[in-house]
Image (tube, rainbow, N blue to C red):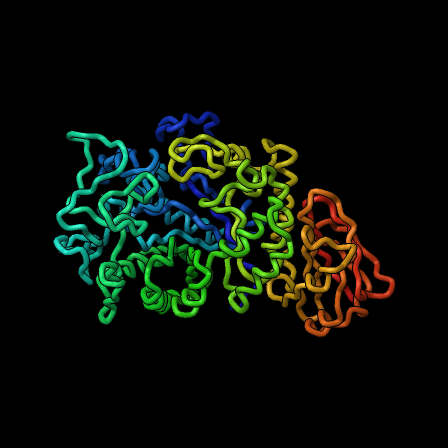
Length: 565
């Protein structure tokens, strides 16, 4: 899959973006804590994001989801609070696949137009739009009031006397009421579901707990879980066609890609069919799969036809542990070796809405400790990279927002205002005026890293050569703390070396002849070098030989570009 530059995705949760309130109340309502809007992501905001080097924006929480905020005056069905997480609700408990979240609109009645304007602004800024597609489950009280005239609602024609039927949209537990396993309201405010539907996290009984995805119900793609997962795919099940229409609906509005939530919980046969169907009409659309089972990577890439898969279980987990001093840096080698030819199809990240913030007490406690990990994530291969908004500012995620509590993450369930983003937003002016010196320094690093990676062909489309095997026994190189490799494209050659250690290090990197042979270059031809992050030029008296010396600060790295001139 060729690219003119690396694909860099900036994840924005609009609910948190641009909110100017400086005081947050735990478990606060929309009126008390405020909320970001589509309009907050202005042309100025998009211009600043584009300058950072991003090619795509993943707008999280766009499609209308269940919440405790009452919008009945706009014709939106009210949710029972017993089956809503937090006041704002989970953006992954979709209430209406054909509408956008009313929280995000300045004029709720005009909310879809406001989102369409955001898509147009993003395109004018030179970036593409990704939104979530949540195929495995919907909100317990799913109801579409905005669906096109000929579209039938999910479940409206189900036979709920059958636990499973191939063309039912949901799974049922006939003869059983839903019994939530935590304290709930009684009387007229009680939530009643009969027959109970199966819960989104494959909870095939009627007693979901607080630890389950109790606010959701699982969609039926023609797999009978009560009969050894027998598949009824000879004729595409009704759910397949309904979900295809949803994808085509959003693609028709100019959406350029979908981050597919918990893709591995949906049969790969559906993805093969639906991605082909969508791409037959929208060839350039991108599909990203949230998949956590490495044994299924090949299936969801080659059979499922996904463009990219999350590299969470491999590179993310390794780099997080290495950053925290729990694993040796050399373990990164095993990450790419296990992936083999799938490496370019993996999406790298160190933060997203599901993971703990780098600067939180649950991860590194200091955003600068992620510098070596980010250099590796961005430059080790041609694959795309995701950065979660606020990561580049060292957002700590240590707020006690409400439903989620203090867990090192930025809550997706609560109305809240994020301090770091609020200061960068600066009432729509952007800039560094309200940022601390440390935030300014960190943001400059991210901008430098992303922009040079999109400028250097050796990084965004070059070959990769791991130098670790030649340095395991090197007395001037510590493979438990340092990691090094080469990237090359034609005559362009770049050496990357990082230091995960908490102490400065003077290292000598062994470069074997095999590296030059594999990359089809001659080391002696390179007579000068430049540190692309630091800007310092380096003279090579005898060309690049079998060794290269570098001084590395703690939690840092160097990207050295060699030149024949």
